[in-house]
Image 1 (cartoon, helix red, strand yellow):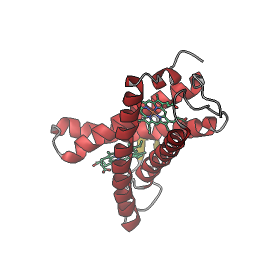
Image 2 (cartoon, rainbow, N blue to C red):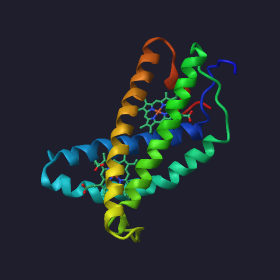
Image 3 (cartoon, rainbow, N blue to C red):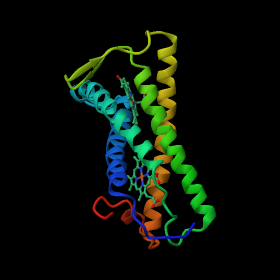
Length: 175
Ligand code: HEM
Ligand code: HEM
């Protein structure tokens, strides 16, 4: 595949950044909550807000994955093929773990999901051993996703500093 400075289609870039903002927020606020260090009023507000926000993200994430299958991206200029293969595998794992965090979060719910007062959805499973196992899966998936995201953001910063302008490929404005 030829190397190129081609940018992602704007829709893909918008979907990347919408998902990135929501996932990073859910991750950081979720772990802050789990640490027990937040003031009680903030700690009470975060779960219902995050549950509604991440529920709304589910169709957006699905659209992102479906749309991603509709185009091919050449590797960025200056990346050796072996490194590009590694990046593609890491990106596939990012999709997988994001999907797993969304699905496990949804399935572990033991109370109805209130989406900002617009609609209330019933829990999908009965509270018990399975929802508890899914909560453990949610935690494990979140930890792995946080580690991979740290590597993802670190890799982007490193490429930028070495003059390979990956952020420009993910620009919201250029097509
Ligand atoms: C500050 C945060 C982030 C920055 C700076 C960033 C930056 C980027 C950039 C520049 C690319 C394009 C790489 C290329 O040139 O091929 C990319 C791709 C990607 N990013 Fe991020 N990202 C961030 C957060 C996230 C988050 C939170 C996720 C969600 C799990 C994510 C998932 C992905 C995936 C899956 C791709 C591959 C896109 C594809 O080809 O399908 N990123 N990111
Ligand atoms: C992008 C997807 C998601 C991310 C990154 C995320 C992240 C987190 C994190 C870091 C925590 C705290 C640690 C833990 O217990 O795992 C958490 C807890 C939680 N998440 Fe998620 N989550 C996501 C999706 C969802 C979804 C879709 C739901 C439900 C619709 C959900 C419901 C919850 C609940 C109820 C808690 C426990 C909060 C409490 O302690 O009361 N999450 N999430």
